[in-house]
View (tube, rainbow, N blue to C red):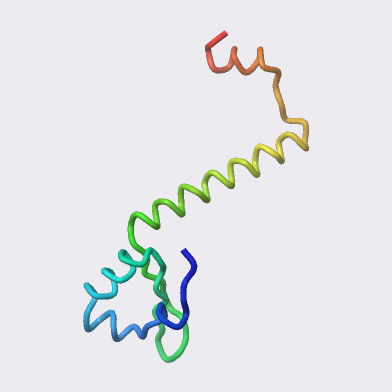
Length: 89
C-alpha cells in the first residue's frame, strides 16, 4: 500500500469537485491518496478495507512488540499457570 507520489497526490479542491472519483481511485488501487492544500499535505484518503487491514496489522505488531518486551522484563508465566489463568487446566 505504498503511495505513488506521481499519481496519488491531489489538491483538496479535486476532492471537493469529485469526491466519488477520489474515493473510487483509492478503492481501485488500494493506495492512499494524499490531499494537499497550498502545496502542503493536509489529509489522507484510504479505502475502508485497506484502513481496517492496516489497523489490524498495526495492532498485531504492537501485541508482538509488547510480548517481546514482557519476555525481556521477565513478565512470563509457565504453561501450567497460563492454562489455569485461561481456565483450561
